[in-house]
Image (cartoon, rainbow, N blue to C red; front, side, top):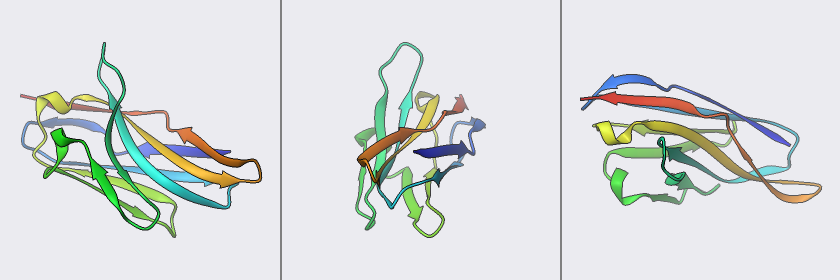
Length: 119
């Protein structure tokens, strides 16, 4: 099983920036798609951005042009650079990864990191 540990959340003023990191560890052959999701109180978890193992990316319309997802395959780490943050970006951000083990393709979630944007 893969363990995902997120870091980098915090409190920032509107217009500011934060960088989230998510490091994967454990027993696996290789990691496939990695991504970031977020969930605000009373709302469903939603996709923010995903990146394939060869670098193809996809973003939610609400973050296009402001957020950038990247990954370092040597470190099994995915990043989310968040610029021009808005109060509506306030959420708990979760890292997700699909990976391959002897059991086949599996998925894990991180514990979440809080991002709060003040107006």
